Image 1 (cartoon, rainbow, N blue to C red):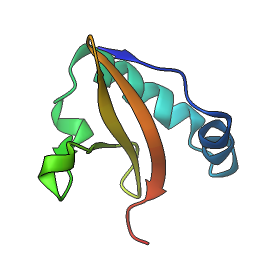
Image 2 (image 1 turned 30 degrees about the vertical axis):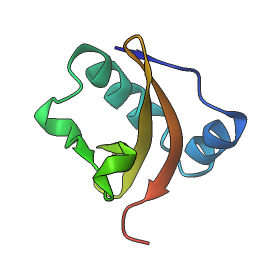
Image 3 (image 1 turned 90 degrees about the vertical axis):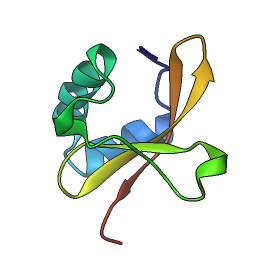
Length: 82
């Protein structure tokens, strides 16, 4: 599984929330096994849009879509509790 490069906005979000290291760790796990139990990968509602998330930490999630050819694009990183 290949993850497309993050946008500048998402990179800045990771830096300002001190998540860069955690994101890289979860990204490596995701690339080898997208449904590893520690990621808590799930499809979001409404399901027909096919938008997924995986856990960066207990508080933060990476929101992604499949781009085809075993590639995903992370479209947002957000606070799960807001």
